[in-house]
Image (cartoon, rainbow, N blue to C red; front, side, top):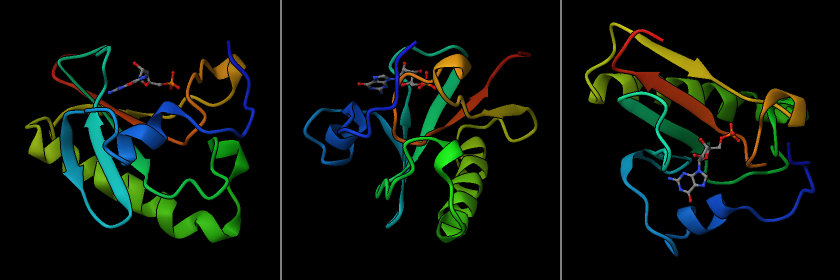
Length: 115
Ligand code: 5GP
């Protein structure tokens, strides 16, 4: 279990393309890329390009409502692009007790088998 320090995360480098990732979907606000340690045949992470305090879902404020909706909509687009729209899971781990390891809000999109 790791704690939320509010500091930079590995996802900053992925957004900046300083470290490579396999990008599945990208728009002005959102980036979706394959998880480096996939837990299912399709395992994509959907993140806001601007963290804006959203280290975790527990930090959500009213100003985040729009980006939260955009993340969930992007999760659906990713599921369609990956061919699993008829069966997928969307997961957000929150906090050390919730098995969160990267403190930049991210939505896991998992599909490709029953799980
Ligand atoms: P969490 O446990 O915080 O919900 O999920 C973090 C996810 O980020 C993990 O599933 C982990 O495999 C993934 N991850 C960590 N570092 C990297 C990385 O450098 N590249 C990619 N593509 N995924 C990463």
